[in-house]
Each structure stands twice: as structure tokens, then as C-alpha cells.
Length: 405
Image 1 (cartoon, rainbow, N blue to C red):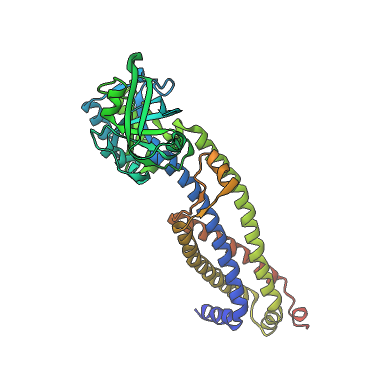
Image 2: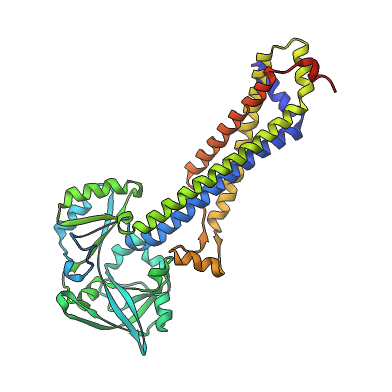
């Protein structure tokens, strides 16, 4: 106990030195937390934009639909089939869709577009579609009007209440044509969706494509997205071989590969970051040893055993590193919280580059508790490990040489 009290007094005998040591450790925690928080935030934002606002985490189709996405490979909607889906644990909601590509036109302008027929209430429960409306109103269950993505409306020079003409191929090769008033305009983070999506009620889409009672997919919402792969396995067992159960990683492997590649690059950057952090902490420890060389030599000369002095130094290091980590975590929470509420937003060519890869051009931060805990423990471990160096130097301390000025 006396060692603890003496250690506490020692670290505050020279406040400037202690504050410098704490600042070095605290800055290391801040740097590592912010770096990891931004990394997780960027990828989480990508998944939220592309997955959470359109594809869902899991989709169910008729076997073979994903390889040949035509209306002839649609499912017949049935309550019994939907009940099997909803009976699987972790499935919170399943919303049906009817999707197909058409030619959208207005006056003399035309563009290829994706028509998505949805049940308005359950669709927004899965993908939060209402949050993407920038003007106008959301769909009703039997609505004969449509929602159009902002990029597509700009390309066709359409506004609210204007008429949109759709021409395409329906179920079993029938002609699909229709004229629809625009009820609302949507804005998606994904440039691909923003340039081609049209949403209408499921009944309206079934009428357009002459596909009464048919759906191309079920999009699922889950209570625990982290258990996505386990849930997909249970769905495959429950629905049998006629149904095709796919996670977003299987539907969009290019995005998953992009994330994994970037995470691999970030590990290298993090390794360099930890190396720099280690040198920063080691530098402050060496400074402390040089400043206290005379003091250590005097203590050994008057009879203090080196093992006792080593334990004293160890406690001083532990206290300094722990306080530095606590300080760093406190500042990190404030910094990451600010970046979470006010994410970094880019413009110009840099933003266009991000949009080409499917990213919304912002750098949001993640507030996941495990980021703070993991990075705090890593820096704490690095600090304590480097604290061994001064004790090793103490073993070879010559008190007479140390007390020479």
C-alpha cells in the first residue's frame, strides 16, 4: 500500500512531466479511436444506403431468378409461404416486391428505369423508404401514382404532379404500358438507385405488368442484422429447394469485396499508426528516465533495493497510462460524437469519385462502444508493455554514474 501512495505522490511531484506523459497516451487513444470510428462509419453508411434502403439484408426469390431476372421467374404470392418466412426466428418483417425494367419517358426525353412495386406500409418498415422523400407524399396501398428518384426526375425534367410514361414487357411477353402522375420525389445515397428507381404500389405494378398475384422477391427486415447468415441458413431449411435465399453479400459481392479490400489496406495503416503511437509513448518514457536518472541513482545509493524501485516505477507507469487512456477516451467520445452528428461532407471531384463507387460523399463516424473499448485496451496494453523498458534500464543502473552531473 505504501508503494501505491508513494507512486501517486511521485507522479504529481513534477506535474508537467506527468501531464506530458498523459497527453501522449491520450492522443494515441484519440487518434486510434477516431481512425477506426471513421472507417466503420464509412462502410456502415455504404451498407445502410445500398442495403438498408433498397436491397434489404436478405431477399427470397424463386429458384433461378437471380441468374435470369425476368417476370417469368416470379413467385406466386401466398399467405402460407409468407407465414413460413415470418416463423423463422430473427425475421421481423417480410415485404413483397414486383420488379422489372422499363423505358421511362417524358415528352422527348427517355431513360431506362427500374420499376419496383411495393406494399407501401411494409416496405417502409423494412427499408425506411419514407425517409428518402425530399418532396411530395408517400404512396397509399391502392395508389395509382408513383414515386421517382431525383436523378431520374432531373434527367427527364419532371416535377411533382407531372405525368410519367412507362413502356416495357410484362408477364409472359405481354406489353406493359402506362401513364402515372408523380406523387413524390426520392433521393438515395446510392447514385445507381438515384438515377433509375421508380416506386409504385404492388397492385399498380401487377396491373402494369399483367402479373396478378405475382411477386419477384421478398425483402426481409431482421431484429439482429449481425445474425444475418444464420438466419439465411434457417430460411433455406424452412422454405426448401424451390426458394432462393440470398444475403446482400451474395447479391452484391463487388461491394463486399470492396469493403474487405479497404479493410485490408486499413489494417496496414493501423499497423503504422500503432507503430507511431509506440514511438510517441516510448519517447516520453525515455524523457522521464533521463530527467529522473539522478533521483534513481540516489535512491539506490541510500539503500533502496532495485526490485522495490522497479515496482515503484511500474505503479507510476500504470497510473500514468491508465489516466492517459481515460483522458483519451473522454476526448474521443466528444470528438466522435461531433463527427457522428456533423459528418465530414465532400464536394467537387472528390465527391464524384466516391459516387462512382457507390458511396455517398460523406465521412460519418460510428459510435459503437466496442471501438472505444478495443482501442483503449490496445493503447493501454502498448503503454504498459513499453513501461517495461525503464525497468530494464534500472537493472543496469550504476548509482555512482547516475549521480554525476
